[in-house]
Length: 70
Image (tube, rainbow, N blue to C red; front, top):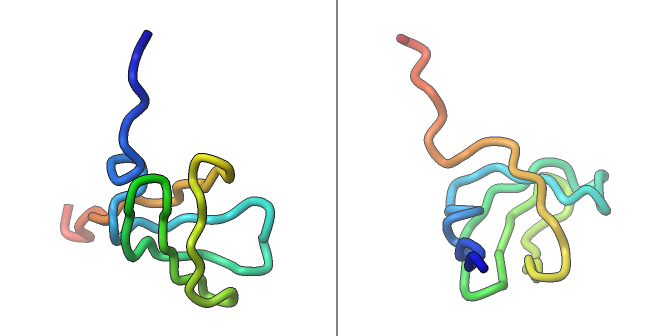
């Protein structure tokens, strides 16, 4: 049996995410992760704490976007 990755590895601070159940909130940037609680600042939904063990966030982009110079 494998151990699931910690939520901080799945949704590192700075990542962009969506909450499929709340599409009107828009994109959100992960602010912090503590155990199963992920704090996200959404474009139209404000700052929310999501329980990642109950709700699946959709990872849009990791915290380090690719350079435009590549």
